[in-house]
Length: 496
Image: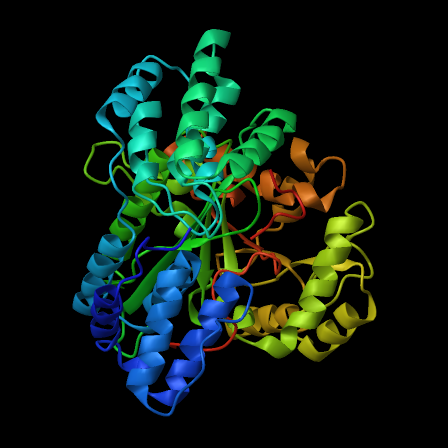
């Protein structure tokens, strides 16, 4: 279905007016970058010519958005990456909302459906909503089936597809009890599909849903990027949200400016929103994308419930890992990174871990970064590295981490204190999750070690390795931003 049924010239005019507020669309070079980002979101090229006359380009772009709501949403997502003009974005959102508005259902049809849905109890409702909405639309928290239908009814359909609200009714019918309620929901959906000439699409979805396995909880991911600004102590904070059983489709959240003093509270607010939205997720992973100078930030110890008398660190409730912003933005390192991850994913029991200055006789020595890099490049089965000192805090640790990024090592651990505790490696290997020697369980081992630190007396906690262990768990198959420095995770191994 088109974004608007009538596709009127007034709609083209309104959208062109809104798009003119974005300078990146009036400059030919940045215009190409914007279209490239939109193409990444769509996974196909945007069928718009780059006219020399800006107005012609904007008219053709607006027309394409009217014809295909996926293009419109991909354009909006790319503008959110390139532009920080809140007023222009608000104006664009208002025009998009008007363009994608749908006529209300007849009153009898609405009343009939509401009576069926208000008494319905459905498990994994959020997951069903996301399946019905599709990967390009972010579904806010819903309180029940009727509320879910109201929310999805305000969303638009992909061309030739069912409206998300109608698709949701079909998903709900597949899970509804008793059987007479399911039959009534399907009959209601059949009638709406006939009115919209979408009977064949509904039948296709019904067959697909009927043969699908019951919805199971999946893991959700909150990825938070802290990008240093020129002014000391200031950061640009961006976030991406991922909870989609069909694949990796992270949705970008708002971009804000924070300081070293306010970042913890901003992260708490993001985590609270994720916990409320993803209350049916199996687990929520919190991942911090940090630059080279910030890798040693104790983000796993950043707290939540800051306004209470019992503020607790994130690591007590969530697996917390780090991702390297430096590696993400350095494309020439990506080939070896992807190759190592593939080894990790396909052969976790053959994957190796090296410990710098470790207990084994053949462990690499600290102070010889060139030798370390050669050692890593010589063995493609090395996927994990334990540093001897913290990166971002000591030159030695920073160089060791740089060698890991250049060699493509996806999993890196260290002690955030100046010198690694002698028993850190022993503690990790003794954890039940790591006892098998399977490095794919290292993330769980670190999570358990951190929890252990908070079960002992507070006076002894600072001496426990779990209070200070840091973990990079960097999956190249889960990107959240385009490659390259615009403004200067892991469905594979161990994914749950």
